[in-house]
Length: 509
Ligand SMILES: NC(=O)C1=CN([C@@H]2O[C@H](COP(=O)(O)OP(=O)(O)OC[C@H]3O[C@@H](n4cnc5c(N)ncnc54)[C@H](O)[C@@H]3O)[C@@H](O)[C@H]2O)[C@H](O)CC1
Ligand SMILES: [K+]
Image (tube, rainbow, N blue to C red):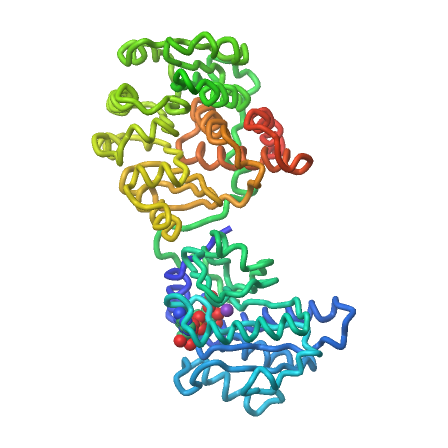
């Protein structure tokens, strides 16, 4: 499903009249009908007919105008509304003033104070104060107004607070939330949901998301790369179909490099997940001083080799269809020189994770290799690792999550899996995929190692970097969600790896 940024919604608003000759007022009429229908459905499905009044709290922008259109349309269904306007009507947008004037001759009750609303008979409150037009943190008078609204909702126990398009105070692009923002039970949005509704903390303020049509096809109005949610329909199309005569010689040989004396679990989890995801062969390379414990622990389906020096290792990487480096590698000068040698000499599919990313040091020595490569490298940082790679602070990354991921991916020719809540995949083309699956049980050491194993396995089996990253993130979270269903916490990254085949089966429709 497409998700829109602020720039895209503005562009669509601008282009619809230019391309179709239809006025934006017509689009507003459609979205207003969408809001009205949602209200009518809710009133019809509730037993409490005494709570049938609807309240609109509107600003003087187009978000408020959407509310006025809905209030007008509700009159045809004999549903009365109270409207409170915040701001100077004379300074409102043209569309707002048009709708305001139209409403004056109708049976809509405009109140000057929220005290004048008969709250005891109110069933639904809609907020149309600010939509995608939010410019900065909420200004003081708006914060106070929202505080007052919260007071009335609490006093009269009114549960249904619905946002028009996006809650006032949630930033459309980043999901950052201003002080004073209220928590909603529903957000009725138009055309497509907005980025900030899928990013924390914004996502937890929106409640249920209902998408209403604009009434004009808009998907062909493009202004550059897109953002999508990672949906089952999409990944079904990416799922591998293996010929019935396939054997281990054609199902890929994944090599995983990792491990250090104090960290043997990480490479083991990555290697085992790689096996469970179907690679024909999996070889794990670990330093000589940890090969024995690794051999004692690891599943017999993997091959384990040791290396004393980086030169030994590079020589032993024969018959390699994809490689992953990093899990448990440790932070050392040797790791840094290994990464430099590897990225400059290995041309095949490559995943860099964990300590492998740390060894790149803001890509100082290696960035040109990534840019010049024929194929992108997959990097799978969590936010802390991404901060190290980019030299930016974690709060800065959180408030520029999608933009930073996109810029990094495009600048360095990297297929980026930025692991966070939610994880996003940024492709060198500029397109972004937002993961909507996953659960709190995944917050445990080793989940990232398992993801690396899944992705390198898909690469080894012949998938390209973008597809392996998208499908890998989906399989990982879908497997974890399946486990979470019966065991909310305490399932392990290894359990997630073991479930991959079952999720692949579900994708074969
Ligand atoms: N294609 C679509 O999706 C359509 C969307 N529509 C609706 O239009 C709004 C966007 O309208 P716009 O006039 O650009 O801005 P808003 O009404 O969202 O906001 C302007 C309003 O808010 C005040 N304001 C801005 N920042 C702050 C702040 N930091 N603190 C306090 N107040 C602030 C500003 O002063 C104005 O009064 C979109 O969300 C949809 O609801 C159209 O219907 C067409 C189709
Ligand atoms: K709003």
